[in-house]
Image (cartoon, rainbow, N blue to C red; front, side, top):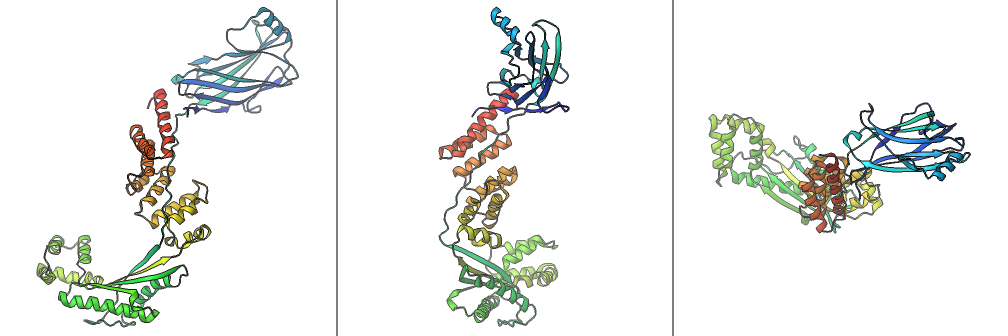
Length: 486
């Protein structure tokens, strides 16, 4: 792949049609203008110059069209080889005398009444002043080769030389098929029980809303024709208030009571449930204290973190702090939230074809596998909003999955969000060829050519086709810097 940079050309002739100027009674047209710079540092100027049928050049006259590359203030300029157009008599004389002008690009005999096209192409060494220069085509008509000009005009275009912009190729990974799609819905309920009791009273205090929340979670799965419940896990927690052994009985008993309630409501079998308990939620207590502004925060954390198995002793030490004021605050503001029941409804989801998956991804994307999402993405144009959105959803549903993160990083690299791409790449498989390629793309876009090249070579050794194309991008950027500087 050769390094070629196109210069934008805009005609500055507002009075007549773009790319045309009157000469000898006809409108000479310029088309397909280009100024490019190659990897050898040569500037190549090209254009198609059309002499129209109505351009009448008399037999003894000579027209010249001379391209000049110059700065706007004409401080610097470079006259390029000219096109010499002879009338019939002048052409015969030129051929008889075998005279060729020193600056001639080509010599053309004018055929009045006929459209003639000159495909002009020349090259010259690049110089820094050429960036932003104008290309001017000077045209004039003389009665003889060295006579005074009888007619002259100019065609002006503006050239803006641009630096090479890398266009790296990102890599996507097709996820593995998920044979069994295991999913889970989780929740936390704060049921209220009379002191030292384990029986659930559905109408007691907050229980109506908390039980409705639990049933809502179960209903989401149970009433979905695409899913089948495989297990319901319930874990009961008590607060550290009171004796540890008694709290253990309360936590387990209340978890069993919630199991019975759900069984009775839905007619589920006993073996569908798994019931556990945590006598006292010290982890929840620590989290609360760590985030609080309690006056004795560090002292309480030290007691909680002390390596000892007697939790009643821990509680006693907290009670003793500051005459019991700290404990009273915890009892009122923290302990109620430590009495909770966590539940998980586990289920399996059937497989979907692509058309089904295109609908499910809009409503219940968690029911799709990564592979199903990937197949949905392939139905959209690569780089389209719909294509990108699929991978955004995928990484939200599977935030720690390496494949989801590789593909999400690829999307962000294409969008130009390099910081987000870097975050996704941190969760990708570090040794995968796609990860190595995309890390190389990140470094390339950040300007680190050496690091990018290393990643691309590693990826290429693992079979990455994208890395091979990206190594050419690195080479092209290096050539660009060799010509223009960094």
